[in-house]
Amino acid sequence: MTARPGEPRRAERIFGRLSGAESNDLAGVLRNETIGGALMLGAAVVALVWANSPWSAGYDTIRATTVGPAALHLDLSLQTWAADGLLAVFFFVAGLELKRELVVGDLRKPSRAAVPVAAAIAGMAAPALVFLAVAMAAGGEGPALRGWAIPTATDIAFALAVLAVIQSHLPPALRAFLLTLAVVDDLGAILVIATVYTASVDFLALAGAALLLVLYAVLQHRRVRAWWIYVPIGLTVWGLVHEAGVHATVAGMALALLTRARPDPGEHEGPAERVEHRVGPYSAGLAVPIFALFAAGVPISGGTLGGLVDDPASIAVVVGLVVGKPIGVLLGAWLTARFTQAELDEGLGWSDIAAVGMLAGVGFTVSLLVTELAYDDAAQVELVKTAVIIGSLIAALLAAMLLVRRNAAYRRLEEAAAEPGSDMP
Image (tube, rainbow, N blue to C red):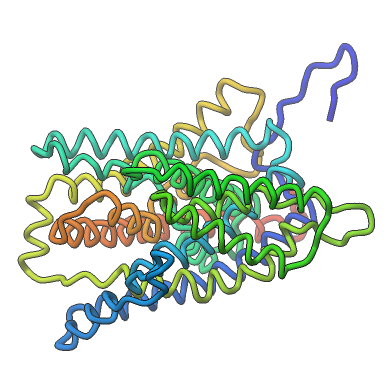
């Protein structure tokens, strides 16, 4: 609301109530991602049990099985298909959500978008710095430091699944903050993957992908709705990005950000929302769980657990997720509220943001992906993956404890407000 002449400017509340449309939309996302989080967790458990069972050789054989046309350089292992192909779907859906929130959602106002975006950026920078500091203090150097980006990302499906279990009395705006934070985190992870973990680039293939992306944007602008045109374009963009040497998940995010989000007059929903509703269940119910099945199978033994204590990168990952992530999120949000016109809603406290910051330390999916990109040594990959799983579980448990307390506090407020004679709103 614009202040009248002579009136003091009102500060923008950054975690106020969501509009009705946004609340309904958020509920739909929570349903999909909650199911996906449960399936992903189940797939991860299956992978861990399988990889540590007498049938572990069969698990390794399946992951290494190669399928795809060799003529197109797409004869990839099933594990690579899961990381490059299925996660591209995951990032496509995350990108659609980000585009829609920033264009037509409650975060289209810079004053509202600034806080979760700043919290996400600080929530990436802090764990990266913590990783480097801890790793170097533990004696790590050279290759060990390549994993600095591992603790920077938040797993949307896992985090929302934890929050959904405890959400009965928590403010909806808090869930919206986590969702926005996680999606911006994913965008940052994509940028890191594209710039840091790309060894060499085939610029001819990349130029071909760029031309098709321009064509995709033009078709969106001209309101073309034929799926049989968009699907071949999307698949070809994915193939060219993979051929270029850039991680193919970048293609998913690029296509999503070029998808039209604002509905035209007479349209019930824009293309971004329509596609997200159709593809989202496949991402949450198939793509992410299958990736977890192929990525989380780490052999765990006494030697592996003992090796974690002596491995600088593994120690740094756990500390980055459990300590660096919540500090970064809380600090980023506080600095923005302190030095801008934004302020916390009167119904929320910084304890709520601290709890969500801890929940952001659940890195799982993207952290496992970055681990595979950061290290070449198989033993190092297994150690750091184990650290990712441990760090994510610790962050999830600590966040659950904090959120249970906040949920109980909000429940008491609601009960007090409902008592006869109460003057509470």
